Image (tube, rainbow, N blue to C red):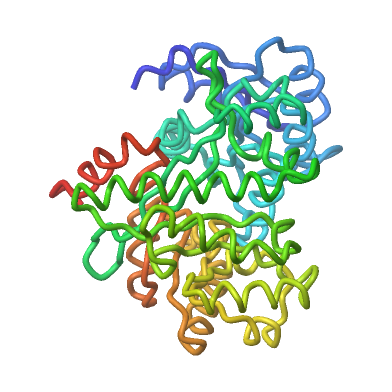
Length: 398
C-alpha cells in the first residue's frame, strides 16, 4: 500500500500512546503525520493548515475537550476529510458519533479499539480508499440559486443511475435516478449542494419533472436494447403540494410509451407527514394511475405507524444510516429487523440503501429483505455507463 501522499493527524492526550500511533503510521508508509496533544490543541493546528488532512485519528476519552466535541468541530468547520474514532466504546455511542459527523458531511471510517496495532490502522485507512471518488466535488463552491436555476434550464442537471438488485438471485431489476449537475467545465456537483436551493427557489416541480423525463428517456433506450428495468425517481416534497402533478407525471411517462407501473416514485417520510391531507390526495391519485410509491429514508422521519398504514405505499426503503454496518451494530440491526417486519405485514416490497459490505448483504438476505442498493453492487453512474456497471456486478466474483 503506498500511502506516502496521505496526510494523517493523531489526536491523543497520552504521550506514549501518541508515539505508538505515529510509529505505526510511519511503518505503513504514511509520510505526512501531525499530532495534537488534546482536542483544543488539535483544532488550533487544523485551522492553520492550508489543506485539510485526509484522516484524523481521534481518541474519544480525553481531558479538557473530549473527542466527541472535537469531532463536532472538525465536522462543522470541515477541517478534515475523514475521521477514525480510537476508543473501546459502546457500539451504540459510536453509532451516534458517526451519525453526527455524517450529518455535517464528514466521513467516519469506523472505530479502532485500543491497543492500536498496525493491522487495525491499516484496516481503517483502507476504508478511505473504498469510497474515494464519491467525495462531493469542489465545483460546489460557487453554487447559488441563480446558477443552479440556469443549469436546470440549460439541461446540465441530469440523471445518474444506481442499480437495484434482488437478494434472491442477484439480478438487477431496477435503478434509482439521482440528480447530478454536470457543469460545462467538467465539474460534477452533487445534489446536496444544489437541490435544496432549487426547492426553496420554487423550482421543485421543474426539477422533479426533469428527473422523471430523463429517467424515462433512458429507460426507453434500455428497454429497446432488451434490458427491462424499473425506474425509481425522487419526488421533491414541495411537489406534493401541487394537485396537477399526478396528471403531469402520467403524461411524461406515457409520452415515452412507458406504463406507470414500471415507475416508482420515492417520497421522503417526513415530507408526506408535513402536509398529510394534501399529500394523501395526490398520492392516492398517483397510485390509482398505477405508479409505485416508495417511502424513502424510512426511520429518519417522524411518521406514526397509523399514518403509514393510511398511505397507499408499495415499497419501503430502509435508510443507509441504519443499513451500513448494521451487521456489527445490535441497535442498528434491531431497527432494520423491525422495519422489514413491519413492511412484510403491510405487504410492501423492501429496499435496503447503503449496502456496502458483504456482511451487510448476508444479514439483510437472512432477514428477508427483497432488494439491495449500494456501493457493494455499484456506484451511481451516468446512463451511458449503466450497462457496463451491470456487467461488472454480474461477473462470477459475486
